[in-house]
Structures are given as structure tokens and as C-alpha cells.
Length: 428
Image (cartoon, rainbow, N blue to C red; front, side):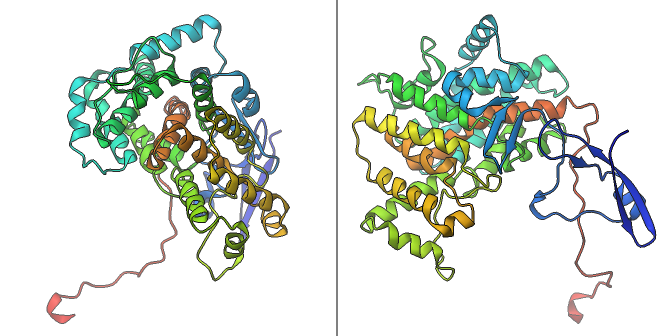
């Protein structure tokens, strides 16, 4: 017999089904609550509300666990590749060698953008933020493939998903080249996915960019670590837009817009800006920690704590080592890394941080790596978007293939004025 919960309001009571999870929190099905009891739930920020079931990724914030389709993030970061993870997220299982080869080849064959898309990039001011450019370019892709926009056509969806994975690095690169007044670089099909992206970003007609395998591997790991993270703000935006049967390009563009906020995808940019501020002030970490503890001081330490994790973010452990590897390879002593390591030491030993479970998160070290690779600070959010893309696609596909799909339409608890009569303007 299925487990039940019950809810009573006055003399009325309803039994609620318990939806059992394979791991983690079970869910209480409240879909009939309003019908039976005449009330709705109120849950600011959806902290206790599940809008759907999902098999894409699992997070245990208390234990510091993240798994994609059951596979621990630590194993994937060490042994897998970004495209293999993209296949896993979108098709549910790790590919065979033949399947992965075919998938990688199909991505490679779709990496080129239509030539007239240059006009779209050039319509923006040079100082436009890359996330705004990327969101517009992603949405515009739909106009080039009108025959493949039906969310119910699985073959069309699959082709569109592969196009997005293939073309997003090129769109990011071309947006960057336009902003810095450099010639566009076309993707090289003889290079692997991440190396191809780095080449289109940093190569010039006058000086060929030679991709360092250590740098390419580090970026591959970073993309894996960002590939999915459950029902976060941007993935929920993708699902919400997709619930209205919007095409995958429009839905992913919505995800990019959601990711652009400083509390989501812009957090790693804010970490770098904070570290730069501390270094410019002389690097006295204790001074800034004291400011962070002062409730009357508006300063906040960025990169600490997480909405989900109440333990060390498992991705932060991996990124810390990756940052050290990259800087060692490049032979750079980055003062920002020194300050970051001092801040981490404080966070792991100071009762103020321990009691509040303010551990370093994924954003804390990622920006240092991007900076060492040569990416401008305002490009960090688009790199987050590139990594998160396979997860968005997997979430969107899971949603649109659900036979019980309903358009997202949250209820509200209205607290405005009750009915009142219109007053003519000359009587107000």
C-alpha cells in the first residue's frame, strides 16, 4: 500500500499521496489540495516545493553529493569528457565507443554558424554584455531551422539539441571577437570540442593559438562540473518556457537570461571582483572577514555558502585542485589565488562560517581558472552557460516527453485591494 499523508483544515480533511523518490526526499502530492480544501500552499522561492519528478541529477546538500544519472561528479570529472557527459545527461546512459564517436562527429559537423549571423553580433554595441548577446543569438537560431522546432518531433529535437551544443562555443567566440575588434575565427573540425572552442576564442590571423592540453583538460572539467544541478533558477526557467510548448532554442535562451543574474551565473564574476578589491586594498584578509561578519556593513564575501549545499560543495574540491594545476602549468603566481586560499582557510576554521555552513562553493575558484586562461571577467557567465547547456537540454527533453505535461501556472495568495469602484479622474 502506498504511503499517505493527511491535512486537516477545520473539520475538513484530505489524504495526500506520498511520491517515493529513488533517493533523497519523498514528495507529498498536493495536486488536489485546492479542489478538496480550498487552499493553496505558499512557499517563497519554492524551497519546499517540487514542480516535477526528474532522473537527470541528484543532489544531497547535507552530505555534499552531486550525481548525474547516478554517476558521482568526482568520477565523471576525473574519467569522463564534457561531450560524454552531455550524451549521458541527454540519453540517460553512458555511450559505447561507437555511440560517442558518432555523437562527437555530429557535434563537429554542426559547429559552423550561418555567415549572416555576423550581422546579429554587429548590431550590438561593442560594450554589450556577452550574456545578452548569447541569449539573442541562441533565440535567433530558431529562425534558421523552422522545420525543426516541433517539441513533439523527437528527431527534430535531437538535431536541434546537437546544433546548440555545437554552435554555442562558436557564438561565444564570435561575440568575444566582435567586442574586442578582432577578426572572426572559424571552428576547426580537426580539433576536439574544447580545444576547438579555445582556438576560435584566442587565435588570430597573425598568430595561431596553440591549445595547451592542460588548459583544455581544465576547461573540460569545469564544463562537466557545471553541466547540471537539478531544479536551479535557469533550469526551472527552461522548463517553465518549455511547458508552453516553446521550441528548444527559445527555452534555452530563457535559461541564459535567468543565468545572467548576479545571484546565479554571475556569481563567479563577483568573486573575482571581490578578490581584486581585497588585493587592491593590500590583501589583508582579516579586515575583510571582519567586514563580512559585521551585520551593519553591506560587504558580503562572495563564493561562500549555497542554497542547496550545507556542506562543502563537491565541485569546489575538484576546482581547487584544477586551479592549482592550471596556475602551475602557466607558471603564474596569482595574488587572487593566494587571497582565495586564505579566505578558504578562514571559512573552514572560523566558528562564524562553520555555524552558518558557509563553505566555498563552485564559483569560488572557477573564476580564477578562467582568468588564468585569458577569459575576460564578464565572459565568465557565458562559460557557465556553455557548461550548463547539456543539463538544460536534458531537463527540457524530460519535461516535453512527459505524457502528463501541464503548462507551468503557479497559484498565488492575493493580498491586494478587494473590489472597489472606478473613480473618474476629475474626482480623484
